[in-house]
Amino acid sequence: MSIGMGKCITPDAISSILANLSPHSSSDVLEITVQVVDLKQVGNRFTFMASDGKIKVKTILPSNLSSEIESGSIQNLGLIRMLDYTFNVLPYKSEKYLIVTKCEVVSPALETEIRTEVKEEETGIIFKPKQEVIAKSAAQIMHEQHGNMAPAVRLAMTRRIHPLVSLNPYQGNWTIKVWLTSKGNMRSYKNARGEGYVFNVELTDEDGTQIQATMFNDAAKKFYDKFELGKVYYISRGTLKVANKLFKTVQNDYEMTLNENSEVEEATGERIFIPQTRFNFVPIDQLDVIGVFQNVSPTLSVRRKSNNESIPKRDITIADESKKTVVVSLWNDLATTAGQKLLDMVDTAPIVAVKCLKVGDFQGVSLSSLNKSIVLVNPEIPESKKLKSWYESEGKGAAMASVGSGLTTSSTKNGIRSLYSDRVFLSHITSNPSLGEDNKVMQPELLCFGLAAFFSIKAYMSFIKPDQTMWYQACKTCNKKVTDAIGSGYWCEGCQKNDEDCSLRCIVVMKVSDPSGEAWLSVFNEQAEQIIGCSADELDQMKSQMGESNTYHLKLKQATWVPHLFRVSVSQNEYMNEKRQRITVRSQAPLDFAAESRFC
Image (tube, rainbow, N blue to C red; front, side, top):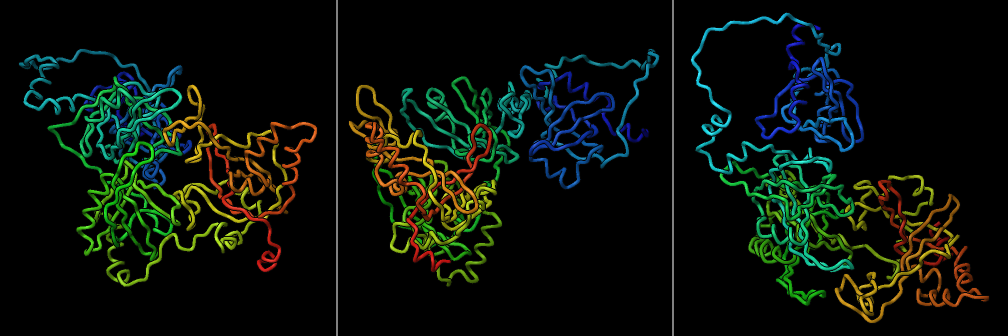
């Protein structure tokens, strides 16, 4: 090892940070230079051993720093300066993990690993000239430095702020500094365990990392008025858990829960950061949310079924380079604020970007705002400038078509034609486990932000399990599942009411076969009744009277080895941390041999 190399590494760096695993403030975090040893990828992150020449410690780089490795900036056997980091101590394990949240490259890869030999040196006494010094305690120094600052600023300088990317469920004490970018309404709920209140917020830190936080009951009442949109807060004493990928609204592996013991303090009297709102745009004909504003409807009053409350609604129409238009329904405050603002700007054709929309299939395709939706008019982003340029040059005079035009179902007069498009064999679906992953397949009839792919298949119904649960008790109003109410009747969570009676609706798993193989399909009420030839109530009656005649099994057997045309969706579901492919029947029809001969 050369002398120059030795000077690049901070002497005894690992020993120093191991002696202070939980620094109380940012000033306590040492800036150290270490060598990267044994760099390797684990999942979507990279790990390495941070070495100071004497001691090594396992270190994790978060996913947001992966680009530094992929670009070659951080290399194995190279040197980095760690500017911010935190320790992660896993319960019931003695091993400690160092998580680096901010670093800079000092040197590319060296020829060899640096090893510092420990030599015993003779200890001597060094005499220095006498100097007049005034002894001061650490408390006195801190008092002199911070005495004239505002309380919030003093607290900000003495507390240890953790970036959101470093948080995980196994950490103990942490404090984050975040900007409130979205605040949901207070909602009441009622289920079998009782009643309560809940609301959600979305938080963003200075690096642009986001996380969703949820509060229930006492915590919801405590913090609802305290959280104000656009303000910055210090938050601590919350808990984290793995986020449900089906319902999370931000790009984060974890979600946060705040209880009545959590601490939330507004950051006042100091520099306020405002991270830029991040979007993930695709064209309108693939169902996303940026476009040129075309027109707006008057404000309507819609009565909510659950509590008979009237809420305002306003529809706006936007278009983009695909020459497609889509209607976006704005609800509640967005209808009266953003909707009115757009009405005043209707002659200028502004660019509208909307974040977090719900996608439905009303009248082909429909988009609706949620409590957490954000509407920006003429946002300062590259996509906005590009769209404005297109509209001014050619879009203004172009003929536009609705994004829902051309979508048909099997119930329409010509809907059978959709069962002949995108025809594939079953093996095309079953042999491709990645079908249905996010943004992998984008089709016009895709109604869930790229979470499903659509195909047509021709197959024989080969087997229906007779011992499966083939129906569920459903609300007669909304068709959602009901539970037994206290006393008598049935409780519907969707309608928030008791009914004396309910209906039965089919939900069946069936096996189909074609020349290439076989697959299991999930079939719902209308399609299942058409395939089996009777309703769920009739099946239930047959099963309850099952005796020597065995009409229930006979009915299922009669439905097998009959050819059908299916329109199916393919999506990815996660069960026990394992991805599984789910094929769902969206429409079906008996095989029309005349039409089939023309198709072939």
